[in-house]
Image 1 (cartoon, rainbow, N blue to C red):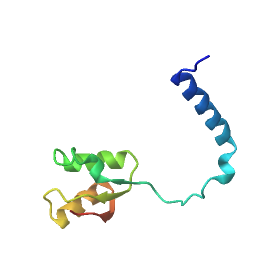
Image 2: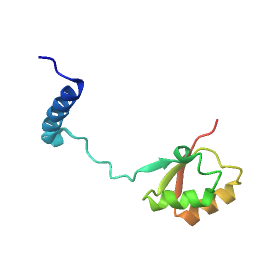
Image 3: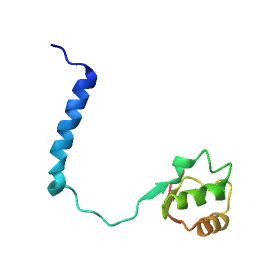
Length: 95
């Protein structure tokens, strides 16, 4: 009797889920830190609507972001946009 890939994946998924039920004892301790967002992940939206995109990021629940460039803004303009969106830029990377 041959097993289909779909059946195998269902059975494997069920076994993993059953094992994970008791895995809370082995789980890592929470860092109690907010999740941040790399602005690189919205790099296609920022040039089109920089401030609007930042507000949407904040509306999604993010408070901390990492910049991936400043999109032709000065540091002061970038900070003003962050402040208006209620975001905090905690790190940045550059080419």
